[in-house]
Image (spheres, helix red, strand yellow):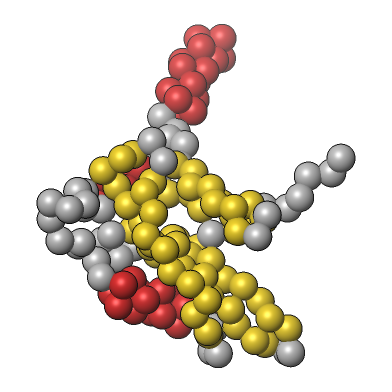
Length: 136
């Protein structure tokens, strides 16, 4: 009986493993530091397309900053945030999709701590991570 169930279990587990979708990686370089954010394909599909020069931007700079501020209140608990910069960028290999890259600094315990966020044009905020330097 066990010998009959083993191939069936293998097929079931293989199908589950193949169903996994890898997220879309957005990589930026700021001051020679690699920054990465991982976007789920479903989140990207839910975000609106934008064609520059032909239609209005679906999310304004104010809307992106409000989304980041709400995200920080709920998830990051950053109290003393200072905006360092915001850029509108295209998502690589997905030309119709754009995102904001928001850089924020918080001063906590007399140390400046950077926070980086990717904001899709539907207001979805994704925290970016700083990649460690490779060991040579």
